[in-house]
Amino acid sequence: GMNNLEVRVFDAGGNTADSSIGINVDNPLPPRVMDTEPPVVQIINPVAGNVSGNVVINVNASDTANTNEISLSVYINGILKTTGTGSTLSPNWNTRAKGTKTGTHTLQAIAKDAAGNTSTTSIKVNVVK
Image (cartoon, rainbow, N blue to C red; front, side, top):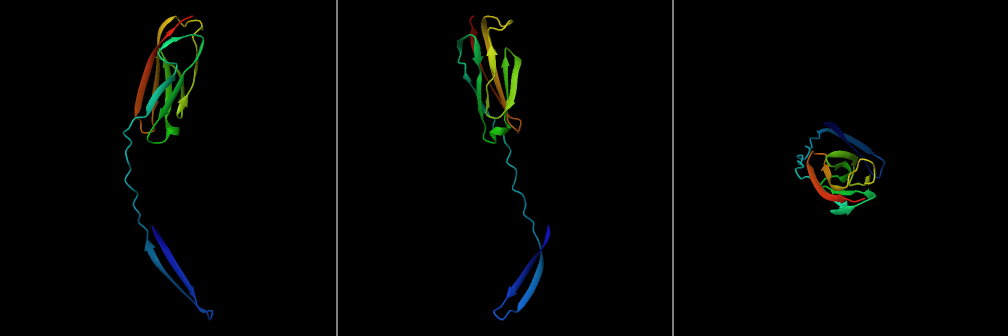
């Protein structure tokens, strides 16, 4: 946009002189870089195998852009358990709760970045009581 550049000079005798000129500042924005890389998501805990009692499901995610803008979701057997934003999510799963059957269960984590790129990981655990 249009701006005025003003100059005022002084000499040793106390004399001053002013001058101004109108300038148009036209700095184009750099081209927007499209984010096409999905975030990386991992289920850190539990590992595949037997689980029982109160299980903390630790999910970590990273992204080439801002990790604060990652949306995380955790599913157990295809049913949403919890959601959150950021690089970590750690919901509790009580495998002794009524309705949780012994046997194989699938834990799934989905990460979505601000650009809409998604990634998924899953593990199978065996609930023993």
